[in-house]
Structures are given as C-alpha cells and as structure tokens.
Amino acid sequence: MQFMVQMQPNQLQEKFLISSQKMSSVTESAKPGVVNLLDFDRKGLAAFFVGMGEKPFRATQVLKWIYQEEVTDFDQMTNLSKSLRAYLKQNCTIILPELLIEQVASDGTRKWAIEMNGGNRVESVFIPEEKRGTLCVSSQIGCALACTFCSTARQGFNRNLSVSEIIGQLYVAQQRLGKDVRITNVVMMGMGEPLLNFDNVVAAMNLMMDDFTFGLSKRRVTVSTSGIVPAMNRLNEVCDVSMAVSLHAANDQLRDELVPINQKYPLSELMAACREYARQGPRKHITFEYVMLDGINDSVQDARSLVKLLSNVPSKINLIPFNPFPNSNYLCSSADTIARFKDILHKAGIVTTIRKTRGEDIDAACGQLVGKVKDKSRRHLKLQKMDSSHAA
Ligand code: SF4
Image (cartoon, rainbow, N blue to C red; front, side, top):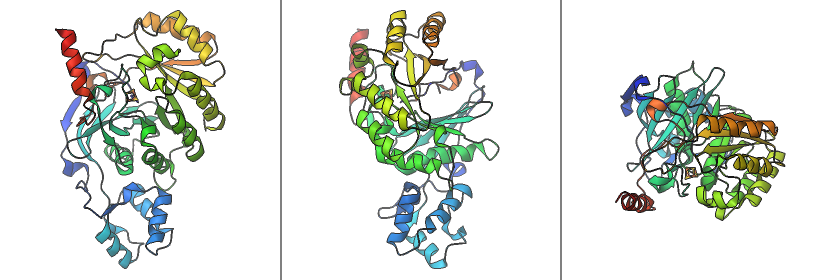
C-alpha cells in the first residue's frame, strides 16, 4: 500500500543525515540465539516469560520500561529481580531499526529513511495536522504485488519486515518527534502489502493499541490492503482495526490491470469481504482509496460504476491525485475532473474527500515512498528492460 503526499523543491526546509549513534542507543543486529524483545506483543511476551518460569506480569513491566520510559538497558529496569535482569542481559536484546536520514518539509511533514539490514531501507512519513498526527508505516521491503501506478512495485520485493522492524518505525518516529508531538494515528500504507505479512503486522498493530505501549485507539490504527480476501476475513477474527482498501477501479477488467491481485480476488469477493469487515470492524465503514489517473479511471461513467459497486458497502472514499514518477506511464487527472468525480459520489451520498498533497518537497507523497530494496523478485530488471525498449 502506498500513502501519498507532495511538495515543490523550493519549499524544502531541512534535509540532513543523522548518525545512528544519535538516533538510538541500540542499533546493532541481534546475535543468533538472542531474542529481540521488540518482536513480541504483550501476549507473546507473557508466554515468553512463563516459558522461562517467570510470572506473566513481567511482560507488562518490561513493556512499560521499553515503550513508556524508553529504557532499553536491562540494568535500569529496577522492578525486575537481579537474576531476571542478568538473564535478560545474557539472552535478550532490544534492537531498534536504524534511522538514517530525516527530511522535514515546509508544511511540517517528515520523512525518515530507516535501515533494516543487508542494505535494505524503508521509508516512514509523519503528517502533522491540527488535531492529529499520522504516521505512515511500511510492512515489507518492497512489494511482491505489481500495481501498475505504484513506485514501490517497480522496486521489486526483498522480504517481510519483522514485528520489531514495524513497531520500531513508530518507536523511532515518536523518539524523534519528542514528547510534545504525539503520533495519534497509524496507517499501514507504506511499502508493502500488510496482509501478506499477516502475523507480524497483527502483532505490531496489537502493540500499537496496547495500553502499556502507545495506547492508540483501534479507530486510529488502519490497515490498508489491495484486497487479499482470505486475510481480510481472518483479520476480522483476530485484530480490531480500521480497514482501507486500495480500490482504484470499479470494474474487474480495469482493476485486473491496475491492481493485478484482482485477478485472484475479483471485486465480487472483495466487496463481500468488505461488507463483512464493516459489519464487525470498529469504524462500521471501509475507506476506499482511489487514485485519479487521467483518462484511465476518472470518467463520469467510472464514477457512476463506483457508486453502483459500493451501493451496499458502508463506504468512505479518498480520491488521491496521482503523483507521477519516472516511467510511470500515467498522468494525474485534472483538478476539474477530480472535482466532477467527487461531486457524483457526493450526490450519491458517499462521503468523499480529495487527499491533500503533503510533503511534496521531500517526495513523501503517496506512491513516492521508495526506500532501497535489494530486489529478489528481479522485477525491477524486467521493468528496466521494458522501459528501455519503449524509449528505443
Ligand atoms: S504494489 Fe500495490 S500493494 Fe504493493 S505497495 Fe504498491 S500499491 Fe501497495
């Protein structure tokens, strides 16, 4: 999924490289056999302590130290027994991902490049607004799907992020922002398809909502999916978060092309899963993301088809002006076309917003999060070949 925001180069306020020392006291890799405690949600951590003969409440004590007191040194966890601290020092660690670069846009949007390992990098974006602050978090290094309008898709895929690498994005972002600027909302809309990294994403979202960590409301944690139907149904049973669907087309023929996973899970199945999720989910509606592509999916007929498609799904629609990137082969619909599209949806009674462009001067816009992916799928090579044959 890709969250989008944009700015002009002359608006750029700051851009600087941050040394890993300054960002975090613990950036080394976990040694084999050493357990990173950031890889556990509360339930997992309680089971871990029980497994070593300790009481389950040790989990809440340790979570409070790590997430509320920002203490990552076991010696400072003074309500743990000396023997337990010694055991944790020997066998466990608390390793945060390494924050390498911070960019601050003129509108306050911040983008961080975060080193994971082996030369891979993901990006997280913080968008401040009057009454809330939203962090866009990545779930994978690259993406195995191939949505044709998405810059992440062009980088190919390396691997899923671990729980610690997902929750670590929130941790280091909140550290950088300090106590006066709170992250109130998290959207799993960065690099990757979150529901293809199901277990780690669910554990990380559980941690985000835990009263002993960040305590975010379930209405303020949103998972965004391109439509992995079985995983949507499963999520309904295990984790109560808000749902956004990357829709982008109102008929199967076009969606098969823009969001190829549609060939596996067509719109009829996707809409059924959305209806069911909305029935049980915390928000009672699904947010649909719809990128506006000039001459592709932005006609009056497209808008009417969308109204029809969503007629029995409680919906909100976010229209996203497309941010072109090199060789993207699409253009953004005009402002008039987007306004006309919105009007049709609005008149049909669907709450519709046009996503504001944020962070343009730091390429923090939706679809512009690229990170650095050591592509194992070799997709970037195929695309490069196609681009050069088009250019010839
Ligand atoms: S390829 Fe599709 S699923 Fe993957 S990050 Fe891009 S928009 Fe999301």
